[in-house]
Length: 153
Image 1 (tube, rainbow, N blue to C red):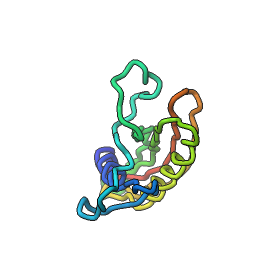
Image 2 (cartoon, rainbow, N blue to C red):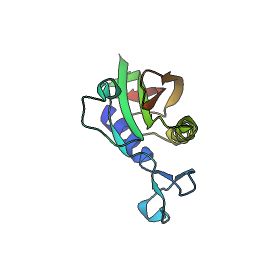
Image 3 (cartoon, rainbow, N blue to C red):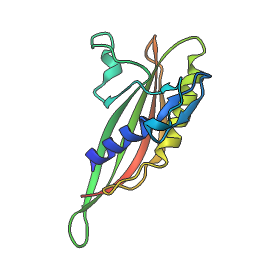
């Protein structure tokens, strides 16, 4: 389930673009991308406390999204297999610039919109459950979007 969720998240996040005017748009395929649009998210990876050690790590392009898998509680399913419910957090990391929070919040809103259509064979859609803003860093803004997910094995 986690592998499929991760792949579907990358697929959806990779469809987000920023226009020359600074608006966020979705392009379903590479062929749908007008000239001048750039990927809205420059780096996608698994979460590994990346912002806590930002000065010590090789830098990664921003905006970045890191995917954190929380616990998944599994129960045996009648007929075989398991059903589970767990959590996923998306750590959306942007540069902190004068007025940068407006662009960051616009991007986060577009990410939330994109998450509405994430589904797979081994999991059902994501449901937004929490939003956390990390204020502990000088040069970046980290927003954490928490989602509940139900899946099967």
